[in-house]
Length: 600
Picture 1 (cartoon, rainbow, N blue to C red):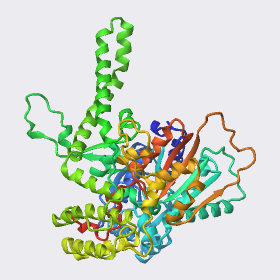
Picture 2 (cartoon, rainbow, N blue to C red):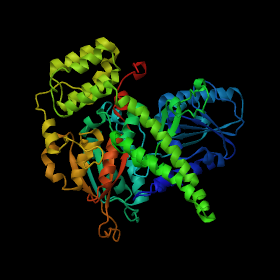
Picture 3 (cartoon, rainbow, N blue to C red):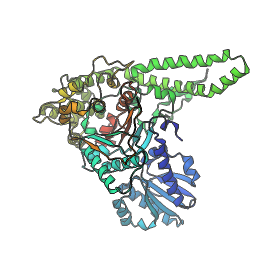
């Protein structure tokens, strides 16, 4: 059991257990010893569902990464390929199978597509002449993966790109399927709200799937009261801004992947007194970040400026607890102290780790470069001079700063101005291509297609109206003891979360005009519940809303939703689901063509 998944209103361990059960069943289909060949991208998400120990129990003896050429030697009966349905991976599998056939080793091959089987992939295997070699061809439906007690992600990295650039709605189908799985486990969600074209598609698919299963009534008492589907393109601004929460900054600077972060090792080296520091570790330190760690759960959603005081408060509590040992006189008291020792030592080591991380982050946030960048972002968000060429961006291009940094700022200026004046747009485009290379014309074209960086068309700039009506900019945001969600960006309240907040109270009718200014339709659907499954709400009991971000969500938005859940008078608890956890850098990267040839 992963205890941190079951602390909230919704026990997400149920979902994890269902996924583990399906995995066990598939592994048991392949009798005898096994080697798994992993599509590397899947190892992270799978690690959250099943550790190696579970695989070992089912006779998995070896694990390899899918690479072209031959497979490493393994004395096993079954070789199972765990892969995403991608054509390029099928060619590598064919190479692997051929190399095994040449060795004349009697092996059984199996293939497990995650999350769905694909006719195209099977056709490619047939063309390569290896389809007949597979005894089992199956699919493992891994749509929504529990990352924390209130957070689910599909980790579908190309979802935004597919929907907005390639007009490919596969990810929306997977989303609808994932939501149906969720309803099978947690009951039908009676109310569905949505904003955006993708949201409309997902809702339509869900309702159609429900009609197709009309014969089987879901008899589970609903856990969720409401589902809110939000398109990422309804709020393009939020992910571009630098996140200012502790977790958000760790993600911005080091990148959090599948709940883990890799950090520079020198901060964490245990130096003994009098020892030379020449033997510092070179392997980066990998740390898991989730609410199973008490201290992290406490500080992750705080604005970074409030983290220092929280850590020093914690340090005082821990040292006071260790001092207690001097007061332990009787055997009973000593025994009690000893029983608490493991927990106290874990707390001390957790504090040491987070103090080191906070120091690393502080080195960046106190730098002049960080401050200058943040100042420009905040000027754009408050509507200062968004319609002319920005001198800071010009300087950054002249100094050949990382291209992603430039693109984030230029896109932000464009979004806050509802497009750039043609001559400003052309100027930026020319400067970027001449400085960073003409191959980036494809990337600029993608950003334009996704409405992130575009020339102005006749329509007026609605951003100031949206900002004022929804109170997206709050002067003097209280970072230490916040009273509004704007603390996560030190002044800017994420538009996506404001929409969620208004939906809960007083309702979207109060902001009809603003909703019309944002892209895509807004809608409401109701799903009939079987008789006797209507919730009888207890006095003071909170409602539960599942907010699903189609196209990705940032950690700062997650922090803002958690803040709303904790507010005394909100009467609402939020569970967050998304196609992908992202930040401005990973998002822009996913829209770049040939990002690997990209300046880091």
